Length: 443
Image (cartoon, rainbow, N blue to C red; front, side):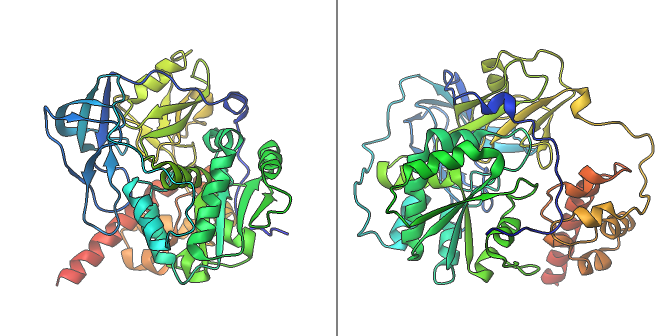
């Protein structure tokens, strides 16, 4: 039986509006803007220039760094610019801008396979890298690098179907509509690590997805175990999911492989299947478009590089002026100020939130020492003290409190009656601490 993790909260789910609708594919945009940075690790260098013709699926950016992933053209057409453009991070990032010719001329014949039994783990990792696959739950860590770091260490693979953050239903719809690909990807991970079985873990507010996937499994197939988890945020964070499923706890500063585990998102597993069996690189993404300011919430399958403005247009626009636009869920997402910013590999949701969804305003933010943030923290940290030391600029004490273990889930800020900007403070503190370490290492 699954256990439970420390802390956590129960925010309103707000999933029903988009969860009931099948994934829709709108017309591809006239222009796609494809950033050379949309994964954890080294930024890619552009391999094309202004005036070049590119084909659908052609590699247009790459890096020699071990932690990186190539980037592909999501349409065919002509490169009209290679320049800095708005990015969901809030900065401007070097991007390849392509004028779509709407022909989807392929880059070549896909490398289709019907049998992968003769492929080694390293060969599969190479295929996954070539396809540009990264963690599609939002983390965007290159999948080939995660695979390689766990070889010889991992005895448990968990496919993450929790999708615990409010509003987001893109993964849920993928489980219902692309279940065979998900199961196929799970079997590939099983082969990579040489395991008897893998576990697909799904929260119990997606009971129909659990039933559907179980129906797709032959009764004699014991290679995949599907389990139901109690709904609780942030169940989908990999360290919390590992604790729930296995009872193991990743140590401070550690990685899942340190306790013999590897966690992959359901959409990532499906993308791995498409890459290995069908030779399909990552050029599209399913994105939940939701929030009470959206005319018609839905899940859209769109080309990477599609401007956010196009997603809202495909949903009928806004029924009221949104107070805030957020890429990602309301707990961990990034506020957006420019709707020309594009869908990237880590985009699983874009929200248009009205006044009542953004919470009450507070004139004076102050810690009242209630301790609720400590109870809610799934990493068993001390948010109250971390905030105080970050505000004072005391990086030594901040480091002693293990601020780098913060997963930025937002539980502390959600539960805080003083409405303190806790997560933002911890992000700033981690950045300052990294800069301090870099200076010390350079001496």
